[in-house]
Image (cartoon, rainbow, N blue to C red; front, side, top):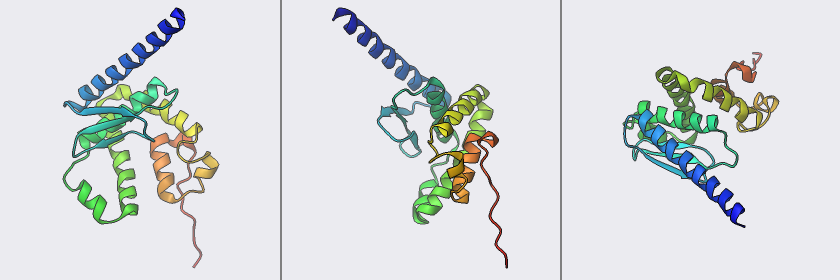
Length: 173
């Protein structure tokens, strides 16, 4: 029983240290004292108004995925303006908000990877794994049947190696 307790205690200590180090990493990269919350959530998020970064606690999350999620949300902290974002997203409806979010994600990911080039490897390996695990809604065959905006989202996140088709179907006149 003593050995089991020691192993569990070490695991809990290691998890706490990992969470604490990711909190510090997020604050350093964001260049401000943002609030970092770890909880059961479907994905990571950043509240631009309240300056709260939420990181999901997924089972078996790899370190590169954690770094990728931190980097992505820090991109919002650094580059997504509060002014205008909420108003435009909420007043035009859900589809507009989804389009705006996809374009904003592509924009901030490019900017944060330019500012912190060491994050690129984490983004690439994490997105490859997420794509393989069906995070974007299915296999690449299924994704290529999705709406054009969903395919744009997958392409700009997982890259050209995702084999996402970006051509629109042609309609005869």
